[in-house]
Image 1 (cartoon, helix red, strand yellow):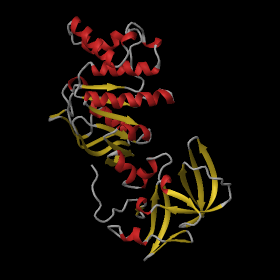
Image 2 (tube, one colour; image 1 turned 90 degrees about the vertical axis):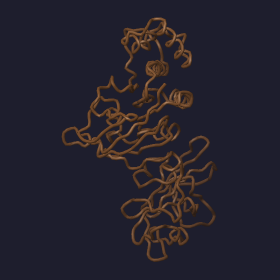
Image 3 (spheres, one colour; image 1 turned 60 degrees about the vertical axis):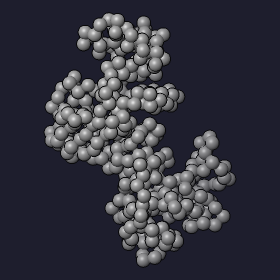
Length: 363
């Protein structure tokens, strides 16, 4: 199997007055699991369709390996795509569905039999090959769609929300299976999802999109711990990062009327903010203590099995705490909260994250 890189150079795609992809520049390395993540309508599926050749850009160039494929037809790109609804032929058996890409190329029958048997065995659907799509589960249909893609030995796989039709339990199983499959095949995968948990679990790198633009491309760890702006910070994580409005006056920092000692945090920044800014911190990095940084009012407590999400109010702002400790708290109760200092991120008044001095790059 040939493994290819994929590159976008100033790619723009519009539909009428809507800019679906706006001057997009990125490169996907050979063998990478690259995820396009964002809310509905952000342009992630259009980006995937541009790679597949199902859409042609208005501007820019698309490369697969060293080849400029911008104007090539889908069949000329050696790309396999798995759609959200799997797109299986209902009148064909599973064997015929998997074999179809080889049949249309007039591959010899004995070779088709061998290759179908091989991929079906690896995907644990060998015993189902005589059945029709309507006779199997959604999870099994997903595997059939993947088998049909794998049998083509493509340069890259394009997966458009392939798990969205599965129930919660099957999604977790299928997610593990996809990650294992990528490790086995080592091929390039471009994956589209609006589910940030899927993106975090599966990806080598994530591209977070908004309104046709890529807001950040980074590893799951960096996107989670060092979001580029408040959009990424608020989109990634469950619950997402707390974003609290603060005001900075020389060495003093305030949340509403409460003073917060952040001198060491502010001094560690590459640029010192003044006036309005945002304090970003993950819910698991906020502690409820006997004494702390500021006071807050308990708004609601949500038990989620092994963990608890506690929503607090500081003035007119809400803040979430994620803890594994069952605290006896009631709405309206006043508590102290403490921020873990080295986990705090500061965003400027425009919502951009301010880097720290001598910040190391993550791979």
